[in-house]
Image (cartoon, rainbow over all chains, first blue to last red):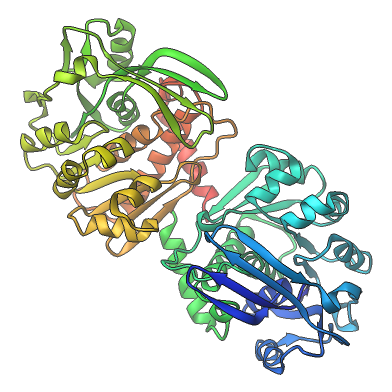
Length: 297
Length: 297
């Protein structure tokens, strides 16, 4: 059993009301992979430049993430710079694609026996390339962002029509479908093919929507949110990892995955960059999950 | 066992994106009393004018609400007129106090054996008058609104210092305490004396905050919210009714009350005025509650 995660790997410069970091470890695939690593074997697919710090590779290796699919290309690593004036919305200040501009994702041989795939937030055309070379996986999911919804909605729609699970936040799901509420919006996405839509609502938690059922999770309560970067990636990584070994998306499987995804996203926002999700004990994660269960009605 | 509810009784003229009503049955005590009537015996304390429609009295009687404390005064009934451009925030267009201007709430003899009191949303000075004549009840709660928080914060603080339970929405709890998040804000209120704060978050549900515990409930999912008026009153009425017979605010008691409060608030917003909470079967309410349990993680 193992999970394939394809997405961005980068260095983030972030400013929030709690402080700032420069060239910190980031990228959708990195957040998702570290988060997933507590629950299953993870194979990370992505590209970095020659300047990618050895310390970052060490972090990924330390979390037993398989790096056969990590390409180290000539040039500079992808960089993103953003600021949060309020914690609910990132303002992108600068994006440098660098080695990402010519990236062609390739699944290494070691991924041929996998059953679960997360297409973390990257250009839908790259997500499509991966889908074309993916064998018949049990669970294939995509994440995305407002930039692709407005920039290439048709390619994104094609991706969505080919996956089982879609991760979007509530603004994204409404703007992509043109529906005024998350329930109608999620149903529009289910009509395109997927079996499950995860609607992320920031400090208010998340909703899992299937054709005939709904599951609500609160956000894990964090008094001081320091840096929301990567919360959605962390959520998606843990959620997908918890599907491993389950062919059916039953209520119990979804609820269990939602709980762990909620706990990991909470850990993530409690610190800058990936610091909140590093080197956790699985026991501690399980205790947070039990606490979450006690806190929900 | 019975619950005393003191608050406004009025006629509401409401406009929302789904339509409008004129001089519809409303008022914080009316919403709360009808909602509570499914769970316990309710005693309503308030005032109306000679113009209060007999049909409204019939509705209250039909829900077995004791009207010994209903004063019928010379003059016109309290009227409120509001509009919702988005469904999260009412804009008050007009308030006519009418008979409410000279109202002095009095608890009738039939309330002397009660154990639970809800001071629904009215002027804090009226809430204080009731508190002064209230015997040693098990559970005393107050609701309020932004108008009193900005208009008479000192009187409101005095009310809060004398009750066990406080109902506020997330904007109110932050503006009253000056704290940036609902958890710190609720803790500030707990430090003033209450044992429990219910923070209402509209479409995102609610959080019950005690000194060392939190309980989260999602909102009951309603595809088309027609009229949010009275949702908070409906929530508070059902919550307080469900405390009847329980001296301790244990996790099970709070969770059960939160579930029923959530179901009743959902029913309320699905129709204009009080229409959504009229003439329900207790069986149906219990089925919605079971459904809510299945939907939370």
